Length: 602
Figure (spheres, one colour):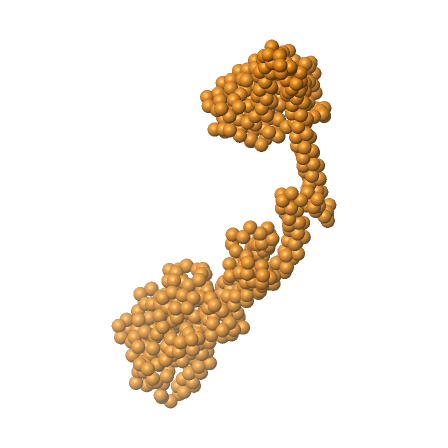
């Protein structure tokens, strides 16, 4: 979301940014945001997939590297102890060693003739990396223990006695071999040692030989070339014993041997005999990748751990994430610029169409939209121009029809006034002028004829007024007005007119007027063109509609052919203006049916 806001601020011009709101209905803004969201979604999906794929690969590579280091260290430590045991076995069969038995504690190798054998033993343990050699003889409970190095250690003697008992009791590695775990010989020591011992391999000799292995030899294996083998600045491989204390030195904590506890989950799993790898917290409380495995050294419950800090292992992933974010930002800016170009290409014709439509709505039918392309928008512009021309022509025809209708109405009224009222008034005037004022009989007759003429003039005026706006429509409603209209048509034309009404309540005023005019126009068309013998007029109210039906048995016509006059178009326009529908059914020789259906009249 933060990247989206940054990209919008970078890419949008300041005026657009200042006026843009969340609810703005600008199609330009919507298209820009749509392009941006689609582009960013694609970039982010690809970036996320690349990031997590690389992260998974790097994690797997790190784990594989740790497993490799763990396997190498395990092999080296196990080989180290195998070699030490082989050295011990070879020494136990050496004739120079066997000559010292039986041991005399008081002699301590300091008697003439034994110097050569003493030097051989001393050189042996020094040359093979041991720090001391112990010769032991005695019965099952009493032992004579003589170290070549004259430094006495009670803890060393106890370790020797313990291992001899294990050998004699048959619970050692083999029946004639035992290994002790690391221990400090003297208080204040910083380098612990371990002992390996076995029986003297000679007839008639009851004795044992023990070699002392310093922890420095083990550290030399565990700490060598950590950077070169892929452990970096924070990785290390180390050993842990069954008491969860370190059996090799830590890279980060001095004097850690037999002092620093390792309570990690991987150490616990390895001490249970499991082999594997996972992410955990090490003895320092730092998140690390760890590969663990127990060592196959009989007599020692040790495990090997190879670990590297999570943060260091993830440095390539962090760099990749930053690169992906930077590339995503650059691509987003490019997408936004490209989106602005495409948006303008799409929206400018639409905006021109919108402005032209607004001008069309204001009554300007002469404005045309330039057609700049041959795609859907170009087709829309051509269609709009065609529609504008058709509306202009329809408006012209409607105005002409209005004027023609007004002129026809004026002519009708003029003709009726001239031929009807005018002639009657002229006749009345001539009678009055021709009357002899001195002749009472003439005056009386002229007065009578004038009264009759005036009655006819009044009826004619009432008829003309009723044609223009029937009083019954205002005073008595649509039903009565239609009934009177049907009666007048029947009386004047001689055509039988059947009127049927079924409505529960009268429509509102303007709808009633439009329905009356539609019926009036329809009946006039039937009288003029249909040559009908009978007409049916029905006004029916259903649950949802009010329906006006005009039906005749006249000559009919083909609705598909263009007809002259404005009668049908006027009826259709009036029906549409009050929200209704207009339908016409007719065939030559089969009469005509007109239906006007008006919803929601009340």
